[in-house]
Length: 63
Image 1 (tube, one colour):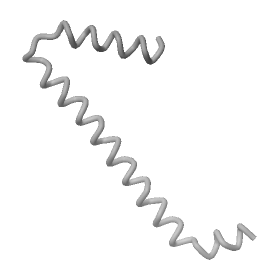
Image 2 (image 1 turned 135 degrees about the vertical axis):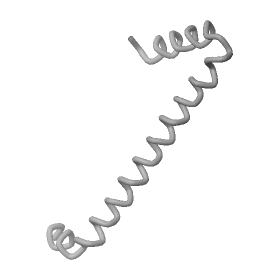
Image 3 (image 1 turned 90 degrees about the vertical axis):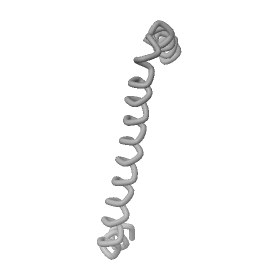
Image 4 (image 1 turned 90 degrees about the horizontal axis):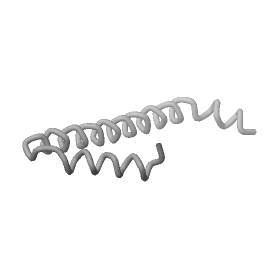
């Protein structure tokens, strides 16, 4: 299924949901977005630490 088809099917499912379930769907979406954001920040922090701790080694390897 293509991305466009998937989005269309998701929209159809949302349109058929009762209003009481929409908040739960929204909560799941924001939780997923928040988790991805945290994972990226964590990865950036680890990469910065690795680079700073191994700066000399990386510099020698680059030469």
